[in-house]
Structure formats: structure tokens, C-alpha cells
Length: 212
Image (tube, rainbow, N blue to C red; front, side, top):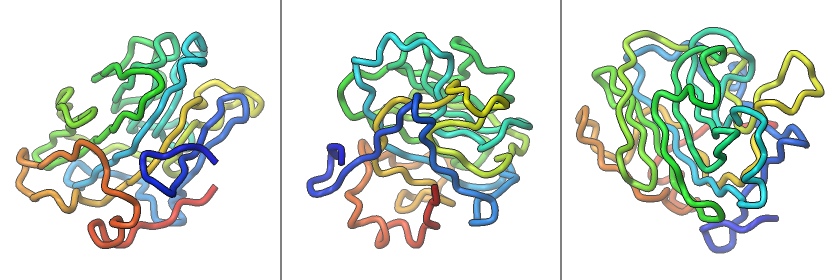
């Protein structure tokens, strides 16, 4: 059990060496093709330990397709600067420690809130702690090959720990739409942090459970 920003709750600690990950499969409702017209948002809290600051194993995937393939969404840590959170919509081959389309640094040993939303009009916006980091124009569909993975991606060599995350995650939400924020393109009210877990069902409606 690890600490949480929310009293009485706990977070999940992901370990690169243990190859920890959760996968939302297409069989359990994860869309394979995410069309440019689909309104969606991803948000989570992340805490990166300073004790792992010197790990340098390339990108660490927070959100990624379960298997490498076509153009997809990657939210990841820079392995050579592990408090740098990055957003890329592209192929895995385009990723390296300087390959982000949008990036932001956060303090070690503190919870940071990350919010990514497609608000309509082909605009994908990237926020950290309520501040807009930047906007990515995405006019084409992208794909979650094998489903959506949280914490890493299975490698061609099964024993490889490359791509796996070492950090704590809390209150991860993957939502069709961005309730309860007003649905006027470009005018989304951005939360500084997620609502407490008890408010999730009331505000966001039913969310499909993730399975390990």
C-alpha cells in the first residue's frame, strides 16, 4: 500500500524491473481506432521518486498501446531526465529521449496532475498541474494496437525491461468526452487535480474497469 493524495486511498507503484503494467484490452472495450472526431480525455496523478532519477533506460511509458504498431498515443517519461513528462502521437520508432512533441518537467517526490484532452477541432491539449503546456494538431486517426497499456509495453524480448515505468500513479481516468467540463471546443475548464475517487461515478458516469 502506497500513499495517495486522497485520504483513505492508496496509489499503485509501478516498477520497471518488475515489468508492472495494466492493460485495457479491446475485448474489454478499449477502442482500437481513435478517430479524429472522437472526443476523449486522459488524466492521472504521478509521483516520480528522486531515488530513481539516474535511471537511463530510454522512454518509460505511462500510457501507450499494449503492442507497438501504427501511429498511436504515447505519454512517457524521458529516461535521461525522469521528471520530464512527454506527449507524442506517432510511431514508437519516432520516440527517443528527445522525441516528444510536447513536454513538461515536474518536481521529484511530489504528486503532479496530468491532463490530456482531444477537445474537438483536431486539437489535442496537454496540461500539467492545470497549466496548458501546448496543443497538438491531430487530423488523422491513431490506433491502440492490442489495447491501452498503463505502465509499459511488452517488448520483442519478453525479459527486456525497456519501456517500463518506475513511478507511482493514482486516479487514472480514460474518458470518452471530458465531463463535467463544458463541451465547447477550445473552452474546456481544466482541473488542477482530479476529483476524489468517491465522486467519479457521479461526475464521469460508468467507466470500464481495467484488468491486469
